[in-house]
Every structure is written in structure tokens, then in C-alpha cells.
Image 1 (cartoon, rainbow, N blue to C red):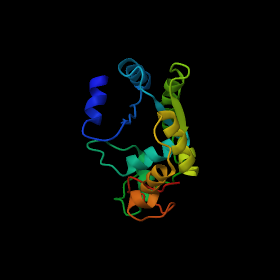
Image 2 (image 1 turned 180 degrees about the vertical axis):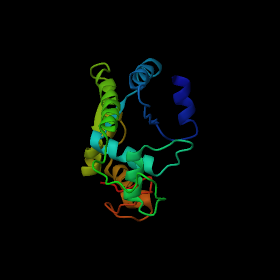
Image 3 (image 1 turned 90 degrees about the vertical axis):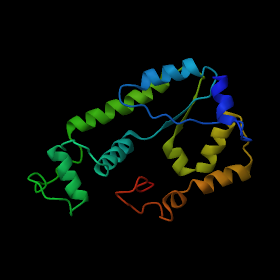
Length: 191
């Protein structure tokens, strides 16, 4: 751990480095256990996003990536045609989209979301902090101040203001306003 920290901070004037991990389905508990074993004293921040938003973002991500060799289900084809009317017509796209998610998809997304939330809840009491994505979206300044206090780094207003300014939706998207939906963009809508 000490070697990794020294290497990550070498050549910088920084005191802290942050690594982001998004576990794949079925790996959350083992990822959390590995972090606790390899980095026993490292502060852990668990960023939680509303499960409904996770599922919706996941579907939009699926719609806009290449499915190398994968055959989409009829429900997936109908969703793609709904959002991309210029898509190549198939036998299933003419059917009406009755529900956005199938029961199976809802179950899969729910289990994956719940798994990550449970893995964080199982950590040692008092070890780690939970931050809701919605708190960041509502008041990023207050949320960042809380995170900085937890990490024991500067909470100077100027530093937090710079971080907030660099993290706005329009900066991250090259000028789009929050709510300006770009279905194919990695940062789709920002709400």
C-alpha cells in the first residue's frame, strides 16, 4: 500500500490520490473485501446513485455502444428503434414498445444495484463514507466540502469553487446545458 501511494503521488504536490472502481455484477463483495485487505487504512467513499437512474443510464449506454457479435432481443431492438427512428427496420421494430424494461431486465438491474449497496453497507462500522449522486447534483459545493472534510484535505472555498467550476455539465460536455439530451453522448443529459 505504501509503495502504491508513494508511486501515485510521486512528482506531484498532492497529498491524496483517488481511484474509482465500478464493480461488475457479482463482484461487489469481493472488490470491497480486497480494498479492505490491500488498503486497510485508506478512506473509502461509496458513491450511490438512484437505482432507477443507474438502470436507465445503463440502457442508454447499451443502446449506443457496439454490440460486437451480440444479437439484441426483440425488446432491445424496439427500444433502439424508438430512440433512433432511422435504425434499420427489423421484424420486431414495428411492434409497439409497451414497457421500457422487461421484467427480467428490471430484476437484473435491481440485483446489481442492490449488490453494490449491500457490499458498502457490510464494511466495518465507521470505515468509509457514503455520498449520494443526487447530493452532488443538488449542491456540489456542500457535497465536495463534506468529501474534503472526510479526506482531511483543504476545504478552502477557492479550491472547492475551482473543482465545482471544472465539473459542471457544460464544461464536461463542451457547452451543452443540463437537460440538453444527447442520446449518443457518454454524458447524456445531466439530470
